[in-house]
Length: 428
Image (cartoon, rainbow, N blue to C red; front, side, top):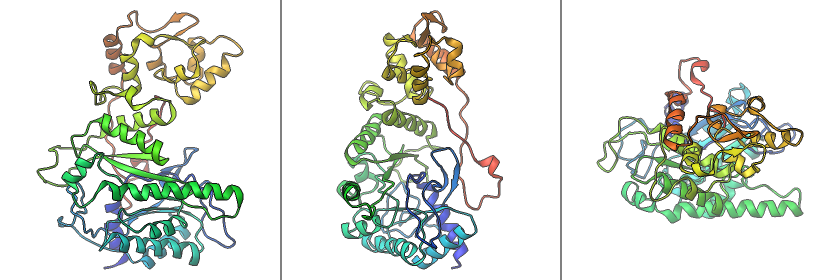
């Protein structure tokens, strides 16, 4: 099979893996080396300053020994199969970089023959890129559950980021849809990576030239909607992963109905709105000081699809509002819908010099369509007359924009990039 045909098959198969992001790495250049991971990041992602950056995102192979019901690459599925050799991936990466197509590599893989065999092939790729081709750019690979710790550790010395995809949020879900996998095999490499990162940081405090280990951290992916697990279970798992394993990101992937297996839910389209709500809640966990138990509980285990999680929380705690914008502390400002981290800092800095009014907030970039119902400025309230949560909810839902249809980018799409890129922004 020609390399171009392999690239078509394996780049398309990689689109279901969403656990990639900008590098966050600062790998030092070597003399006469290729590439740079210091601030450029990777492709089809976003850097810290908002730039879109390029990435070669492929699977090493879609041949798989597992038969997971939710996966398009399951062993029982009849679809075109291909496998890259390590040399082919290295050549593709270097040639794509020299042509300015990419700035890094995101390399995943189905499990071919065995976890150890697959991990050995990944090691061959990253080892040759770093040592033979002197490639200094960003590399993100998978840690295959079940592979020997020694191989995973060797790969971690060459790459910037690793990810171990949990896929399903509960052990019961794994037994139902992926009985060949088990929870411990998934968590073991995550713990190994965490330990290696911690040791590397401590070693570099004493020895500046000590080798780095996965300097950009680790991530994981959870599938949303393949099982009956609630948003509360998913969010609790994410919170636990951040606290216990120091993950950089948990990615959420709406379940795509690629199988007629009776164990899977009957849905016509992926639950993209639910996926978006989980991303918003994840943001609240990481940057806004919320806990999973605040956002959801056993009486309300799923998010309101019509409202973002922050507005939903505020309406369920309407007794805490309105807050005076000139007196509320930083933590309370973060809980006001429409006020983000940067805006809260701006408010605290601005009110040191003079009291802030409604029009000052607009200049500071506050999303007043949401914030106006939950704040007062100099004692004045600019929302509706009643603080009834149902009335406010109706106002917020009415002013919400219509959901857009999103589509995964493909390396081979013949459509202009202006029609493809969709920027999701704004403050919660």
